[in-house]
Image 1 (cartoon, rainbow, N blue to C red):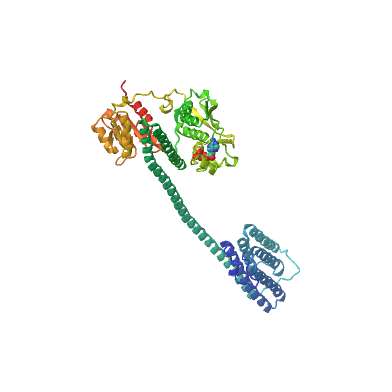
Image 2: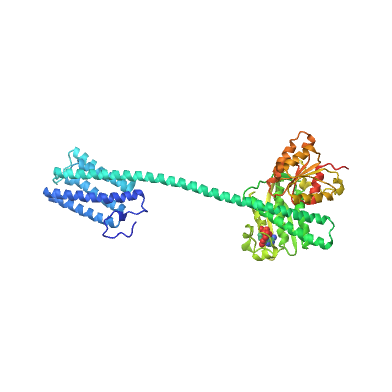
Length: 603
Ligand code: ADP
């Protein structure tokens, strides 16, 4: 409501505000013009009645006129349309009933008009309940009067007034004008409301389109960011691979002790950098929702042995006690799950335990909590006697790029991504990581995971089941005809050097298309296939080779060389018919082992 309206205001525009709805604005206007019209009409009536010498009626009408003028003035000062409408309706009801029962003692067209006015006005101004109330308050007495009149038993002591025809005409006209005015007003407000609704809907439609565009832009920018990260990481990985590969080569060449120390530092730093790039890449992928969990068979004790093998060395380097306890009940069980992801989670937690424990013990525990029918529930926990974490930081440390404090960063390095990855990977499987920690005493990170147990006795996948391959003398590979499809010259040089140590002179194809040609025209025992190459990539080249007519060529073992740490690569590698993969920078021993697994080594 407009609070600035002065007492002397007579303008309707000042009592209209933008906050009022279309319907309320129409009510204010209707009341304003309706009261004005009523004032003019009643004033006319008063004069007419006075001239007609009906002084009593003229007097009552004057009181009515004054009341309406006061209401009008009040309304232009304080536009409380609801209260004023009630007052007007009470007045009208009194006039109507007294006119029918006392003053005129009859029901005529004027009564009908007044009834219509009251019904329309009350419904329009005050809504259904009040509308119904005032309508019945006026209709029932009029009907009652008609019944009494019909029975001829309505007789009171007051003589009815007979109105002059001119008064009837004035009242009739004024009433009709008021009824039409009200209805037209109501109709206009109704149409305006509908129009407004329509335009609001249109605006909303436009807004939705805009909103959609903004979301699309945000998604695109997130995608661009994620792609940028992938590409950058890939670009960083490629030269890093060369650094690590070259270090491996130099290490194979019997370096002097001082050179070996330097090479160790070089390898350590490059591996750290690579781990960091992989973490960023991994986290990026998880955040982009691109992680698909595998369901393959594996054995938990084997997996634990695999994860803990390398970590044990790290712990020993720091002179920490490293204790691994795997429930014996899990020994003969082949479970179904995602070993790569589980390895990653446990690996990150053990790395942290070792990193943040200056002295004491690190315990790694896989305990079977439940073994029912074909499901096992296992609790994995990694406990240390390290620096511990303050209670208020227990949530923060799981946020990406967050470490407990600046001094942690300074003292221990790291990106603050390890725990974020652990948390997200578990969350994606509807699991939670629990942490208990006391500063200065130690920490324990744990989570529970359920696995289906395989009933068939299927061999466990190679990666986790195999005993370390028997060391085969280097020259046993010497007879192999190897084709390397690789476009990066530094990598080619590295591989050549490495292969020369095994007595192999590989053939090089600089892209997938050349590799196919070479396979067609020469004979090879094994192909090492880079995946990202110009002209034709490794996946397509492998698919083409698998389609060759000569079964010997179509079945040549192919090992993919992947530079990317992306998870779906594995699936694509196998789908395109390749036998195995090594991720760059590959460890010479790993590559050798995989090659030996795929080709027949003469006894
Ligand atoms: P980063 O290890 O790269 O710093 P994480 O996400 O793995 O990143 O860990 C986040 C932080 O959580 C660490 O910086 C450290 O402050 C704290 N933290 C994690 N594990 C432990 C632990 N076992 N003991 C003490 N603090 C830990």
